[in-house]
Image 1 (tube, rainbow over the protein chains, first blue to last red):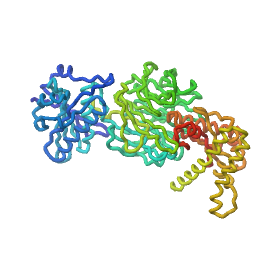
Image 2: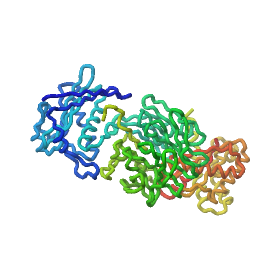
Image 3: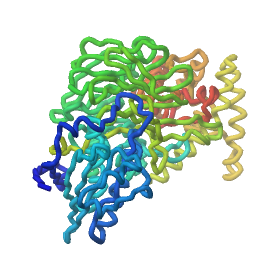
Image 4: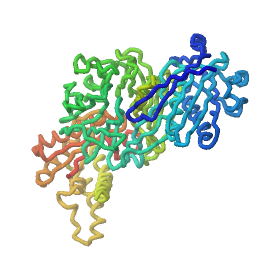
Length: 458
Length: 182
């Protein structure tokens, strides 16, 4: 088999270790491959695609362990998406070794695998790992995509998530969201003395660790789109203010020392500004702070509570919630604060609007009839759809591809303080595949990271 | 240092929790504020002073004048709000009038008014609403002649409930403005 290798050097600020090689195979005829396996993710998926994730081939030692673990992590990613059904390993006939010369497709057709993942792991003496994978269309008997990653072996989980993203992209036509992290608020202790800590983990719950120690109440963390930074609210010295946390250095920086409370922060899409609410004399308005010049611009001037601002991904408009009409509703305005328009007109209260990274929808929290809902509507307010419902669902955050929402859910609490469990949930934009995101402690206020800033990803 | 501060806060919370039902009765009955309050405060006062008096063997006085306990027991440290509201209800006015009088007597104290909400609202909006409530209390006290510089405000939104259940009774107690001596 003729192999042509195109080398792509990837130089992320933080992720400089990763080198991806794209292998283009002479045997691959794109026109036939394109027309085959495809998942439509715009419909609720009731029939996940069966996929066989073969253990990778490895010669010896550490690489053998990873040759099993990497496809397992990929399988867990794909299964959680609700779009794939990994086939049980015990059904596999052909060995990883035998597949070094190519799959015997008949062996995979009889177990009804539509797609097949194979791969190979090598680790050199310096602990550097080379992981190669191939994705096959079993019924057409063709390779669909293939990539090689080299990385320090300690980063094997990330390589697995990159493989998940590549498979998701090849089969759905959309960017994946597996090479991402979640920052959230870890909650412990009784409700009246709740201890809240910032915590971060990979999208699949691995690599969990705390960022703050719980000595100060912290709320509503959000990722920077461009840097390893988080903006959040801290009650440090009993003064609720917006801070920026640097994930690499652990440094926390107060964002402007204003007289009143600052809260509800979120980065602008270019990462250069933070938009937030400032409260003075009981009146909350929205303003921005430029992170380089420290210049602030006030966007709303109204006696109402204007809060929870979120930028359109192109930076041109801002959505927020306000009770200027009597009760909380959603509004959209230009980024300079001009032409404010109400967009929500349904029954009940609407809050926490968050603009989709694709720009096409705004996710929100709705409260009506004693129940909370997570829903979406178009930026003009049309096409409202509710995706989840409970005693208390709140605070949606988008996957970077705009196809999945994460939020938190709190149960009713009993008089004695028991109950009231708080945890992270996710649901597809189609309203299917609602599931709990497992965290070591109770959890709230999730925020999804952007796809890791790897310039060579696309 | 931190531990000590925590203990103090815990103690205050305990005291505050004890005082809540008394204050609650007063607010919900809404009958003549002065009489109800003096009745409820005298019972609470005797209960609260019994323990320290027995322990220390000092004269069985009430809480030290000008202390948080004094404010809680003899004046009332909190007022309550309607759902998604921040107006000072007629029933809360009596409490704030007593607080203003107490602040005139204890002219050296400064206070922080905390604004709190029940859980039936989004976190960020409730931060704004809690701040509104704290500022509404502050404005009322200022209107009663308390100097603005003596009053700081802070919002806790729905982060620090005093009553645990997800029911009307708990929500009523949690929608509150609490006056604390600095």
